[in-house]
Image (cartoon, rainbow, N blue to C red; front, side, top):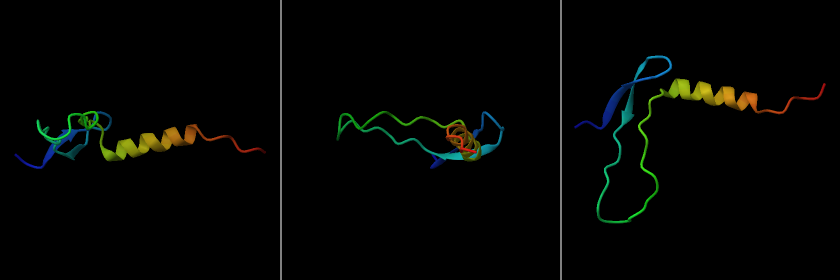
Length: 63
């Protein structure tokens, strides 16, 4: 299989590539944290959402 998968963004519909999810191993550490999620939002939309959220949480400047 390839190292990257192609998905379509839920918001804008662009096709983008994501890295393959890490394979789990039975040996080694039992608990390394939660498994990775598959992303359904392209990096451009994700950046746009973060910028809008950051702008809405700023304190208003005094006049």
